[in-house]
Image 1 (cartoon, rainbow, N blue to C red):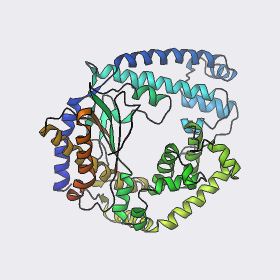
Image 2 (cartoon, one colour):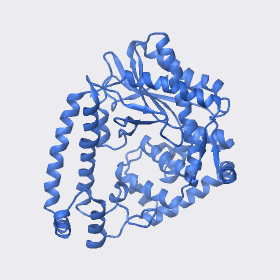
Image 3 (cartoon, rainbow, N blue to C red):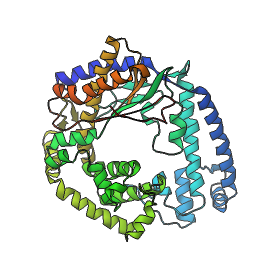
Image 4 (cartoon, rainbow, N blue to C red):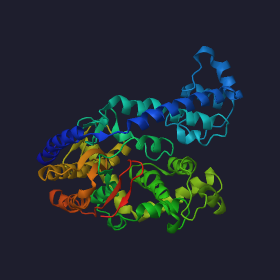
Length: 439
């Protein structure tokens, strides 16, 4: 860790202390009501499942040890007793029953089991943690700078960074629990594509830098055989998180194809012109999993033919680690020890991406305190500065944030050679209903 890196974490710790003290306002009535509703739905689903022949077989097989939450028992019932072919396997070769793979299984017990697990997580993990942790209707999660190998942050008591957003059931219930202060708006200032920007800074690939603003949408359209005009925000999200980043971090077309395919069902994806994505792929002649995997293989080949400069950098980065035993991030932090290929490529971008946000939080916090603003930084999620902005101060705060996050930071971190953009999403109702605000 060089002097600049040490100063960043020292000042970051002080800014995080202010952030924790500020706290996040909670709608406790909503939390308690939703917890009660979830518990009632859990009871109904358990009764519904108990009447199915599959669960009767499950109970007969395990007797007193019967447990609807046991993945090991579920595997045996689905794949051994019911002879269902597993849609995917873990890295160790065992059948996988995570949510994405369960969605692909044709059995009457699978959908209610997924719903049951979601509701239990909502009630017993998220809502229970929020209610238990709140003090006078404010939540004060801990934010840490000393627990993550990539020199990113973490959160606990409860883990604010793990609050669901994409899941249509959990995301709405949980994020409606977070509300603004009187006269405020709750939401976030999010670096757009910051990890991709860091990838461009690392490899200096001119095409990654040139395509910075369009690459996720372009690759999403290729993955799902769409015109770019048909790509929705959710489809772009899949292109970003299920194709572009896995490629940059060492994955390959087979697991990527499975994740992209399951996202169609789990996220109920439709095109911008309201066509069901699964039916669209069938019309394009990509009718089953094997067809889709072959299609993604071709997209992958095209991707690396285009961004070959970055591929060369990846190979050199790995060789240098094998020679020295460590990697040194652009932001001055060193990671030592045994690391997989995926970790080596991931850490190089994720660490500096967070350090950009951390530096911005420090500067914003100093400015807000200096001018005694009512607006407050109340949390952070990797690339997102979560704020409660007083509506009368909103124009000044948003303009200052853009200045700090997109311009001033380049004077501090001279290795940033790529464009930086931020997106602001806020709501005067709750965290779930936030909408984009142009800056």
